Image (tube, rainbow over all chains, first blue to last red; front, side, top):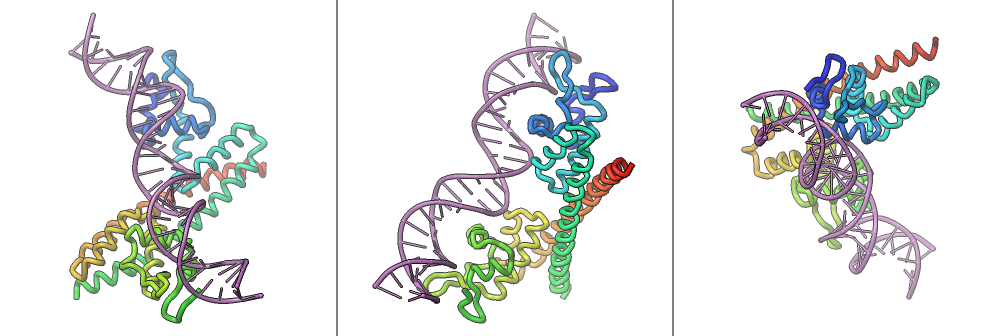
Length: 126
Length: 126
DNA sequence: ATAAGACTTCGAGCGCACTCTAAGTCAAAT
DNA sequence: ATTTGACTTAGAGTGCGCTCGAAGTCTTAT
């Protein structure tokens, strides 16, 4: 239900990002968007390309387990203007450390699972 | 509060595994243990080394986002006896695929985050 | 002997992140 | 003209995984 080359309907954004329209509205309500999404004359949301770019980045933060509240902190800094760059950088660097720790833990876990898998495979082929 | 060299109190297991005593009891109630944990004469739980080994593996499954219900499926297979080995192997192999997919997604996400971090660092040093 | 503290049970409560419902408006298709 | 289906809102409901509370028992230290 695209209304122009420049603006996308919520269903388009849902299709592009893999989020449901419910979730997109929820994210906006939860203060995770950089600004309220533009509305048509009939008050339907009109997403810009930049909005989609942001939603896409947002899903990267979420898929690395950044809590909604932290994303909101980041967004509030972004809305506060250019002089919060250092604070936003710090927030991302701290998050990056968490992600690296998660990856390490998962890597250790998969090694344990692989070990178990190997014992099953030996047992079964025997 | 260890009661012997062979059996461990719930608080010991909590300390060893990083889980809370509440969580250990919850896991048992939820059917995630291979069998009910032995009790002392005063009905306090007495964990064996094998129990701790299992809890440790269980935390590996959980830390790779295996749902409680799937862990329970695995445990029920294990309880059903030796001839469910193939089914347990299959369950672990499917889980392994999920974990690899998660790792890939997180790796893509961290790349996007790193890109963003780099733009902040350029902006700040400029 | 008494007090402190760890244990027990069962069930309720919580936090997170959606996810859905209901009632209503609007636009495009037949 | 009417039906279909997507959209809107506010608020309630859901599912998961714990997490806690209350009331009581038992052990250990003073």
